[in-house]
Amino acid sequence: MGASTSHERATKGATSSAALEFVKSSPKKLLIGGKWVPSKSGKTFETLNPANEEVLALVAEGDKADVDEAVKHARKAFEEGKWPSLSPHARTRYLLKIADLIEKNADELAELESLDNGKPIFESKNIDIPGAAETFRYYAGFATKIYGDTNPSDPSMFNYTLREAVGVCGQIIPWNFPLLMASWKIAPALACGNVVILKPAEQTPLTAIRLGELILEAGLPESVVQIITGFGPGAGSAIAEHPDIDKVAFTGSGEVGKLILKASTGNLKRVSLELGGKSPNIIFPDADMPSAVFGSMLGIFMNQGQVCCAGSRVFVQQSVYEEFTDSLSTMAKGLTLGNPLDPNTKMGPLVSKEQHDRVIGYLKTGKEEGATAKTGGAAGNQERGYFIQPTVFTNVNNQMKIAREEIFGPVASAIPFKDENDVVLQGNDTTYGLAAAVWTKDINRALGVARKLKAGTVWINTYGMLDPMSPFGGYKQSGFGRELGKYAIDLYTQIKSVYAKIG
Ligand code: ADP
Image (cartoon, rainbow, N blue to C red; front, side, top):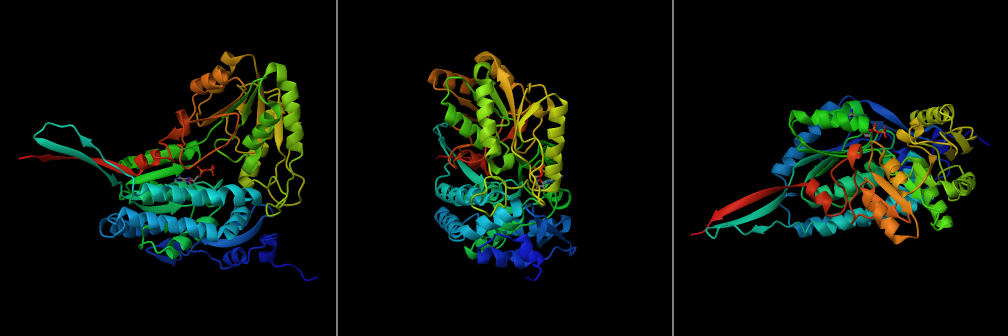
């Protein structure tokens, strides 16, 4: 047998010829002014397959000069182009077309996502790609339902409000759900008549680039969506600072969120931030245990735990602590690690070496702090790739670093609690407030605890459910602004009050 090429090694397990072709046609370019162009500097960077550390493709490294160029096109598209003044019905049709194209190319997109991010193909196929199509479809419906008010003003006046597009929107997204995050950002912005400059994460640029192609195929007017791949300092910071960008929407780390907020002060652009979490997942003894164990497993190990709303602090009432953590550990141990493109794989690698090393650091810290790794606690035993074993830490208290800091990996910290009051206090004792869950058959307790938890989303007897119709966002340092649902319309519109004198 001859030696395999690096392309073959990088795409091992991929079966979609479209995905293979897409990866092969490298270097990837920037979508600026309706055309695919190299970066002005001519620089590119590598995007890797985290399962085998091979280079998948080279990608244009956009920076300030490219952002400046894109903003010029975006401004023109917004001020003079037809998108903002298009009939809302036409915007609906464009968004539906994008949704249809995502579905039509779902197998390719799913493979690209798993190759670039490392997530198991069953997740890309069942969550990421259908979720992206559904989000476009949901906001397609919204384009025709963005209402103003008429106000009961003095009879000599007719006063009404208009909800108008904000303008040029910069959108900076992370690597954990690349296409889904792109759709959460782009779809509502377009429904409201904005134009968009999207910067995908440098670890996972491929599906955003492919989405750019599909948006062109859907026939959207030029420069309504532009895609700039590149790094945070560079393309990202240029977007955050740009004096002619009207709004920035960001999903990512708290650290970078703070930088974005600071950078926005130059022109006081609107900012919405969706940041990290350290979400409490609370198990009462009267819960349906098999469901609670399974749900908690999904809550922390789905997408290798690289989920901002992961149930990373598992609070278990003392009387069932041993039993529950035994079951969760057994289930964790049974999760098959391997090539993300294998349909039997339940957990792939983490997205990058950097992320892998960070999580290994937390595993070490946890042990030093006195926690016990009931299962896992180490890197995976694969020869290559950024694998980490699913880990359940017991003997954890809420003051330990592994209970306070966002690990963003497959690491559950199981913390015992005494009673309802105790768990509400401990659950809320965190700087974050993105999500929480409570497992109990007692409806009064469930609803009561849901009220007391300071979190943007609370699940009862389930974990991780998200629907484009329901808002998502954080309390406290998990950010501000709500994406999804009708609330995203607030992020992408501004309100004008019009007074007309009668007579
Ligand atoms: P993570 O730690 O999960 O990688 P980051 O917050 O670093 O999350 O990254 C999320 C997104 O923010 C990525 O697209 C990244 O390139 C971008 N980013 C990173 N640093 C900056 C910055 N200084 N300004 C703007 N965007 C940035």
